[in-house]
Amino acid sequence: MKQGIHPEKYKFVIFKDMTNGHEFLGKSTASGSNEKSKWEDGNEYPLIKLEISHTSHPFYTGKMKLVDTAGRIDKFRTRYNKK
View 1 (cartoon, rainbow, N blue to C red):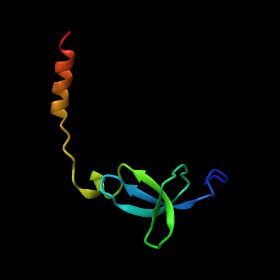
View 2: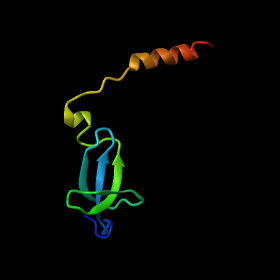
View 3: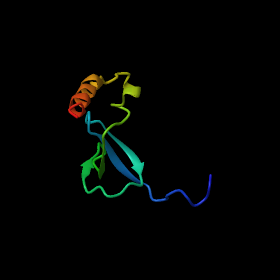
C-alpha cells in the first residue's frame, strides 16, 4: 500500500438503515452529521443515515424487489406519442 494516502482520524459513528431501521456501530472518517444517537453502551455517537445496507440489500437478503417497469414504459410511450 502507498504510504500517506489513508486518513488517520477515524471515529466511531452509528450507521442507520432508513428502510428498516437497523443500526450498527462502525468507524468512519465521514463528517458533517449534526445528529447524534445513543448506542447500547450508553455513549452518544454521530448518526449517519443510509438508504440501503446489508440488512436491506436484495443481494444479502435474497429477496428481490419487483419494479413496475412495464408501467413506466407505458407512461413514457403515452407521454411522448402525442407528437
